Image (cartoon, rainbow, N blue to C red; front, side, top):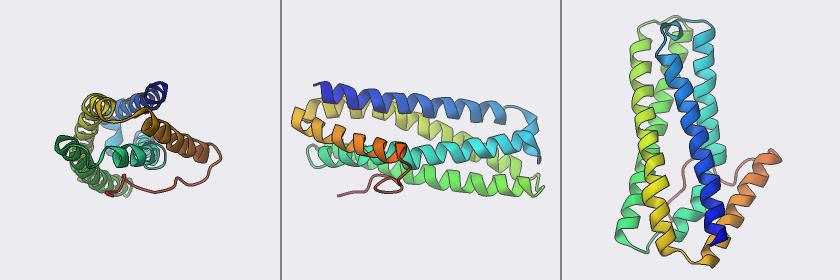
Length: 180
């Protein structure tokens, strides 16, 4: 099952990178300087954009083949995938709202700081929970349900996404993995 190990090493490495970015975001939010225009707010805004871009262009496209291969095999797995997809939509909304609040802060609207902090906190908690679900429950389900041939196809899809990223082509799809 070398293909499965390869796929999960890549996914785990991306999860670690996303957790690191979340840590940087939370570190800035824990300090008071980001609540007004200036370097800390600019850094926070860049980190939020970087995390969203990484998720959209690098991480999520890899889930398309994995979700497609798992969908329809077991009701519990379908429920897990549905939960992850629903959470993804909710996280996207939270981050869009947080970005709007960050823009308001850049314009000097200090009252937006409270909302921004709450939105980013909820986003971080939800993303961490989903990364843990992927690392544990989804990993276990995929190991149980997928054949070596299916893993080879998934790794091939992941390789395509990575090649597209390295050559700066847009990923095959944008946003979360779609239901099939």
